[in-house]
Length: 74
Length: 387
Image (cartoon, rainbow over all chains, first blue to last red; front, side, top):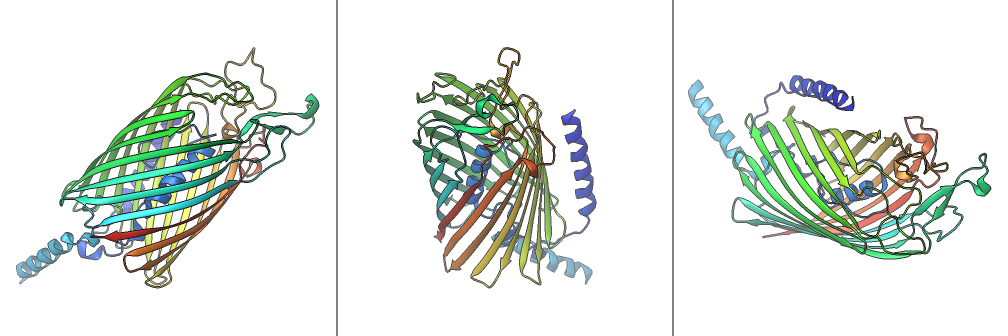
């Protein structure tokens, strides 16, 4: 049930992304996209600590990459 | 003439592709050409709250993080992250109604005296970069008094359509040993273990000169001892299957010289927990040296099907948990961060305030936990880049 709901959402997102992806951007036009603040995770250590903190204190986790190791956090 | 034009354009394009800064940061990039050394210190403090027994102070944690990323040859990079946490405080053990009165508000009973513990964590990643993308292997080790975790992972990214699209995938496996310490109350187990397998797949697309988006799915299976060893009335299934769907969007605005980050995650699992997470950040460049980053995060989750904090019937219910992390609630987090750049140095200062409340949730769960956590976190640190 939840997997089918996820697949539907994924299909909608893929369609939106494909439709949006109509502009051709030459390599020399990608200066803005290359700025450090445009990275998925501009600060790797901050991202690691956020992931660890929310994993420890909330009932759900994951999604940014494969899950990795755990901790005995209470 | 047209041929000359296209040849000139091709040359320009090829030259532009060779510049490390022109490949989108969010796509599979080229190998770093400098060594990056980073350090962060964070002070994490949970708010105290009214309790009946045990220590009233919840966790305070000092976190030290060190990272070094260095190129090895032209096509490889090594990334090492070390983390050390020094913890003190107590955690909720159970929730009860005073005097057994069904009409009274439930209160928190803590896990006895304040404990002191430390956790050390090391993650090492070796990554290879190529024209087609990159691939990496990661090994992790984490150790604390009552818990040990060993993990290994692989991930990769493959560029398509002249680096306008990237396919990414990852796999990880973790083997954890649990050996609870003996305290005021006996733990639920003396020694146990659990395993975690996780896979991830993603697709990113350059939308135009200003924006890029990504969509990803992940599946994680935890198996083994998933019960909290320190909580009374806690017996959980020995398997948990988790699914996530994530989207991320980055947009650069020329006029304010700023970029918008918008991330959303949908989560569901076979314990009936569903959650939505929305994170929005604004990277405002004040000038060449200073960037301010306010960000807002909203999180809401539906309670687990066996969450029952005050009236567990251990003879009837196969599974039960009073863990506030499995209750239904919502949480807001506001963060402000300043980044100052001076030559090869970057200095970072940030503060976060996190508050949660059963009334802020979207799922109308009727069993509000009084043990929900509020916390404040301050971070300071630096990055230093050198040849």
